[in-house]
Image (cartoon, one colour):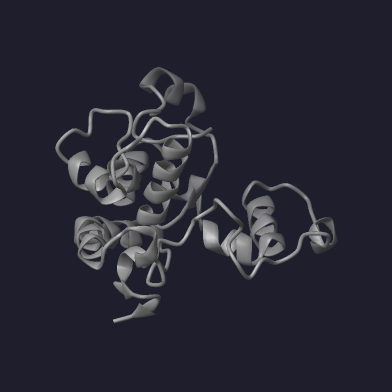
Length: 186
């Protein structure tokens, strides 16, 4: 099941799915928004600059292009925990999957009580670099000014603290948690 702020399962379905186990992947919210924005630009449904979209989103989150709001993982996870107990959720980072797919899939199988062994995933290779189009980097050279990155970091700061506390995931290496200057941390 895929869920985002516009695809919340309704309460009727939750009643019947209340015992479901959820495997949830998260990625850096700014990278997620940037990837969505790039996809929208490629399909010619978005003509505005990325930073402009991120700033305008808070004024009009009812629109489907809600680049900023979909990355408010803390609020979304708080809502999900009103529907499902924490022990029915396995929360993972997208980066960890690409860095070690076999280990991540073993964790998923264990969580779902699916028999598997390391040899089942031996053919998967670890990827040092993020695959094209997945969790893309957002360097200043791609048109996102440092002041815009600071704005986005401030935008997500409190929500990511809530998310970190609820999920137990380490997000300290996410771009949103730091400010970059020509690929170097400040």
